[in-house]
Amino acid sequence: MNQPTSQPANQPTTGEPPVLTIDGPSGAGKGAVSAAVAERLGWHLLDSGAVYRAVALAALDRGVDAGDEAGLVALCEGLDLRFEPGKDGIAVLLDGVPVDQRLRSEAVSLMASQVASQPEVRRALLGLQRQFRQLPGLVADGRDMGTVVFADAPVKVFLDASVEERAHRRHKQLKEKGESVKFSRLFRDLAERDRRDRERAVSPTVPADDAVVVDSTELALDEVVQRLLGLVEERLGREEKN
Ligand code: DC
Image (cartoon, rainbow, N blue to C red):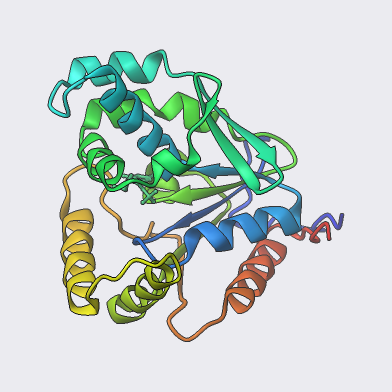
């Protein structure tokens, strides 16, 4: 790996492993981009949305109510959550059981957004998320990675795309799965969810002051990946692994 000859301005001085944060709204392609960049760099990957979804699933399974903040915090503190590489990517294990399919259900999505709006729950999950910061580095995917969880990250990206493009991508995905949902409804729901996420009091989905905003509306996945690898290289002088 190339080491920089001089210290870039954003390089952490703490000696902590480097982090690339990728925040942004639903459907901007964060998941696919984060996985590809982590793979190319040989870095760890944190899908923080899956953490909120796992808490939501555990709450539904154990009958903890969305409004029971103390119950949810207790659940977060005892959460047995692991991410393990498998043949189809990274498998999420809750209490040792793979839960990937269940994490994507509508009920879990709805509960996750309620769970994620509670400040004490967010606080209780900080330690778990920060444990992912390990050598040689971490790609952290979410909404508040650059603003809260890894506020000292040396490279921050806010990945955006127009509501229309994100609704088109979602529409195509659902169609491929054999589900038919009206485009106009997807568009309206996404726009509404964006507004709620941007305006919520705790950890709103907004770019960190020092984030680079990348608009993926007109870009293919690989173009976004290349741009992010370029940013990491520029800030850290690191070469990709593969
Ligand atoms: O990215 P996703 O759809 O898997 O996220 C699931 C929920 O968790 C969604 O309501 C947004 C929320 N979330 C959050 O508030 N903060 C994060 N860092 C990641 C996700």
